[in-house]
Image (cartoon, rainbow, N blue to C red; front, side):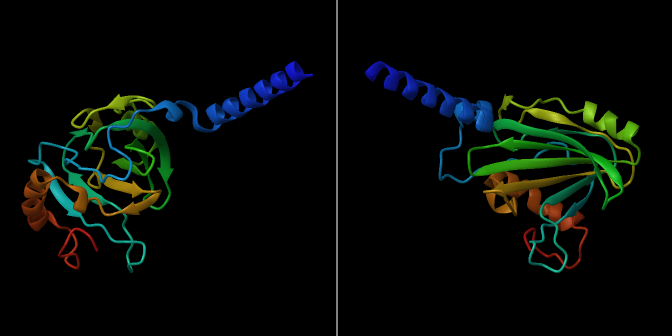
Length: 206
């Protein structure tokens, strides 16, 4: 009788572990570099600003014109880098109905609380052209990457070519700027003063 109860307990425990693996998968065993409760430190997602044309500020969901990321527009193709280390959690190729173009989003999980997401919006108006952008992504889901790792190349497919750079705090988008390193802010601030596309945005976070 005791052996039967023990066997039943082992079966139930096995089912429970199996369910956890199905729900959480490999993330259950990830060792994150960012400790729980800590805030991230972000580099800029590019090093070459010579072809930067515009910067779009962050506007919260509560604002009259929500825009929950910082846009960086370029007039040519440019390499995009990981702003911090983490695990590639998602790579999504999809049609942006609002913008009328195809794009690829890459989300990097920093820990259970934080994730960085970069939308590669090359301004691809057809799926075939959009697929070229998707093919220019160099990382895959599950990969652990370090800050500065090239995650892909933003291809120039039109005048609206840009990346949307965002960060999620417990699945809620917040402004990335406060989490930039001092070096990143020293580079970003004069660029924002020069390339800010919205005269109503005098600061990066609104």
